[in-house]
Amino acid sequence: MNRKKLNKLVAWSAVLFFIGTLFPYAYGAVDGSLRKLRTLVDVLEFVKENYVEATDTDQLVSGAIKGVVEELDDFSSYLDPKDYKELKNDTKGEFGGVGMRLQKVDGFITVMTPMPGTPAFKAGIMPQDRILFVDDKDVSDLKLDEAVALMRGKAGSKVKFTISRKNKDGEYEKLPDITLKRDIIVPEVVYHRMLPDHVGYIYLVDFSGHSSDEMKKALADLSKQGMKSLVLDLRFNPGGLLTGAVDIAKLFLPDGEMIVYTQGRKPEYYQEYKTSGDPLYPDIPLAVLINQGSASASEIVSGALQDNHRAVIVGQRSFGKASVQQVMPLSGGAGLRLTIAKYYTPSGKLIQRNYRDKTKAEEGGIFPDVEVEFAPEEEAKVFMQYNDIVYTPGKAAKQPEFKVKDPVLEQAVEILTGKISLEEAQAKAKQARQEKEKAAEKKDDKKAK
Image: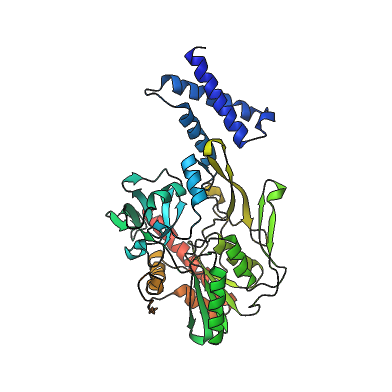
């Protein structure tokens, strides 16, 4: 058999193996789309024979598989044997890193929030900063998990970052490189305090395995202090475990209420999550704060409380990340992480946002009942006040001083204490939005002239 025929056979074998592994029903399909795989084989064959340097067929096919999966969304991915092994081993609660929660937004690895007390936090990395390079490696074309892998490492080792940040005009500017020393990341998940007028306040950092228990402790302490209403702050909360979201929603919703449901193309991917048993706090007036950094489990909780008319949601539209990924092993030690379903609020609203399709810009995320504009840099200052109470190994916790103005929290407290009605707050928000739109139109008109 000559070399050309051998290469073609290898290419066909690889593609058929790919089809049989990822799409077990593809062998029975004879539609035009499947026939187009001949084009893929032709490309592989031509590259193998004519590319300026010698190529490896297995690497070419792996690249083709990655291209297929990455075309779907930002959360599905093909995992080579090394990445799949790391995913299976990534079960510990502690890791060597710099302490940033990240998402991929508009094609950039974006900081949703630095974790209080971590190297990233202490270095002044801000929410919405974009990570451009890690140790001089361009991360623009990397999947989120690939970029995170570059940032993690042995505690005590150093890693260099090149980042960009929005200026006063809203344009991103590159900042001087910063080098951080990795540390063991063990963040706290719940902070609480009593506000004036007996308004309890709980800031939930994320949804971990013990967030529900910590919430219960905080609620019990606030109740002893005479709490009459509650603000649950989910701003900059990127989510976490679904079980944590369900357990926290159960604290406030009556028995048998829908919390969230998943739906995919297959009937078996439909699953409902409902409350069970009597809630510990069924009647306490409740406000939930969200912003563009609130994602995943945060959106499940806020969506459930909103749709069940249990809480008023205040702040800005949430991020919109609520999909279900299934991981399946492939031969050769590789793996596939595939989005199989999406989450919906009790009323049927899709939580997941499609950032790739601009025609669906108004779909997904949780929209607040009362929108309150807050500049990201000012909102970040509010968040940064928690630095003094985060757990830091070897250091005693300090009591923070909350001096930064927080219009979102102030609006929620005014509603809970009856200083302003929900309808009045909504009318005020609508007027502010209209004024902002008019100002933007005037600015555009001046530019056009």
